[in-house]
Length: 367
Image (cartoon, rainbow, N blue to C red; front, side, top):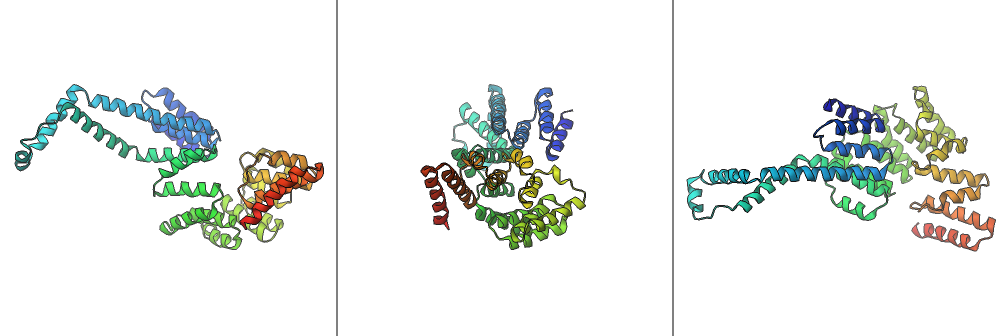
């Protein structure tokens, strides 16, 4: 029963059915006398993808507490008086295996009970660290991404320091660089991983995404072609190709690329990212029906909705959308500058004009 539920949770998670996966893992906890510790991490991952970040962090920390408690209980069981006496005998036998070693150490005092306890504890902790290494790495990556989502810089740096050189950890680091608009740093990591793992074709998509963000659209298309040759029906890759065509040519060229997906039977309206991009490619068609529901989890949706309002004399609506946004890219600084300049002109506000000037100067100074 437990094994079946674990597989149900795994399958649901990888199908994108995160609530169903979470519920399967919860049933494991409810029905098992001693549920596997990693189930709490899997629940945390489900909550992360449901954008329930504080709850995801709680679950990850619950895993830490459960693991600590289990380790403590294991050490207590292994350091009872009887267990310590048995370990002392075992150590004595080991010392006597070699006559030469025994003679050399004959004068040594036998270890005290406390020293034996310390050795048992060290051995158990070392075994625990080895056995739990994959789980501990997953926990750190989860908390690393959660720190980014809740914008806790101290926790972010703490988790960053615990990352290793494994492919999973480096992919996680590259993803955070990308999300923080550090596209060159992300590119460097993805390219290094691609050199080490030529058969991992998905890395070509990640590199292509970085080059797209760096405005190297031709390079992005060239790298993307490697992946599309093997997976021509990939919605993510075709969508990225369409975005490159939009930047290089126009919306009509981009829409033509997306038509490839619809011809293959893909439901374009079922993919939020593609729905968003179709609004952009059509110069704002259906913007008010599509973009408002996407602003909380597609960052560009907020910016494009602001642009739509500016084009349709909705200056106040544009300002309300962008006033709390902390800009991190030149496009965001420029858009905040334009919005504040528009508000300043409409309301005769020197304060907003001054703010617009500051945003524009920041962009100019960084060029």
